[in-house]
Image (tube, rainbow, N blue to C red):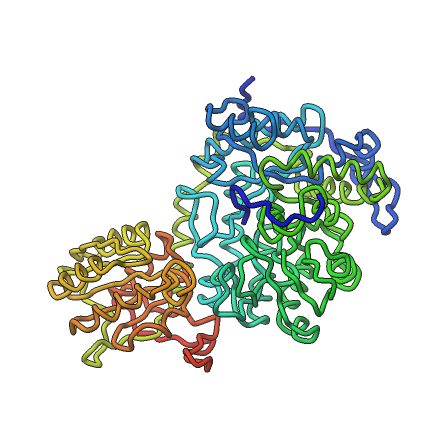
Length: 614
């Protein structure tokens, strides 16, 4: 997930458009075939014609996917223009597309691309108009993993994310979630989703993957990755991207801020990390994203996978037989920028065998773009090598209907995004994901479910939005709810306020967020202290983990425990249903939860259930 800016220490070397209807472009005739590339691939007539007509600068532009600042392609605020100027030397998103002949654009909230679905659709149409004025249309991308990584907020349909879906136990639910997500993305012009996450989260202390991974079991992860690739890609015009190859699941460092190393042997990598990527390839995944991680057993040079020819070409292309598009993770992440400069990193990645470069750091797009052009002109990269990658990118656009119809119908967005059928399906799916691991209070009796009608509930929350959503859902069940926003580092005052309030309520619900992680936002374990202090009042307490289920190992036995895996409103409504007894918690752990000594406290498959009172 790219950041807005990054450090550059320790480098090595150096007019408004609103298109509301479909506009058809002429595509190649079915079956038209051009010359085969040196790797044996055949290009369509459309692709070959484009390659023949493109300048080197235009070809290189197709290898870049980057962000732009603004909610509109041509009309920007002074702030947005300043940010585009600093990053790219032009004012508007359309001018960025035109300047670099971009192959793709990626949307983020921090780059002010996402306000509401209709606005996003208009932005997409405006950017496509800029791209097709003198070149191929764009692949417009987003990280819509759902759960904790989602760029399209409500009214787009929310799902609880990978680990929650795996807890639900149904691959058909995962496929259905991907299908609905793809339909809504395509409705607003997003044609590439950087999902699913194919990493196997075998490290409970992983700071960057966690609940973004389906499971700590490679078999479970593989089946859910396969299901989601099918859901995203089949019939909806959205390309899926399995990430982060060769596997980011066993890191204790975050590649956004440092360069992680994985010490798996080749045999361990084969058993743990490889299976979900094989599953994605078997399912026909369009794109695979590389990771900025060092895996010495796969390449002893010390180069990260993104820059490693043995990993990208030798392993992924040649050994695993993958011939789709390979894209880097964001090139503005510190794992890259603090060790390799923009003047060399892009060229090294292309030499390794990637096809597209994602999000160069702000202010360095010119450097990376020109360095690739210079590498071709100097002979360091052949133009034939560039052509192979451009051909893959163009084929992707052709196959997903972007060439034939790059625009979306703005008038149809409201009925296609966040409609009642989609939201109802999401709620049913999410209701199967909540996992109960403990349900006894201080007196040894079950805490849940409660008789919600007329009950008094205290919600102390590490996440304000989750607390608000949980309180609203509990009120719908008839409860009287008090909310305390205690944050991820509750102060002594916060804890004292919760302790004082608890005896006046029938139940205290503490919403946690990575309470296990004393290296992150809660170094003193303040969330744990809050839960402990509440249990010491002798009142009923239930902790609800909105991130990793690993929290349960660090909280007192006297507190009940539910794993929601997500802070989304759809998850909080399901949690409220479990608390109120209208939903049976049928979710089962998709990861092993270790005790403090490293032994398994709760194994994969653990979970309690009780009949729902409907």
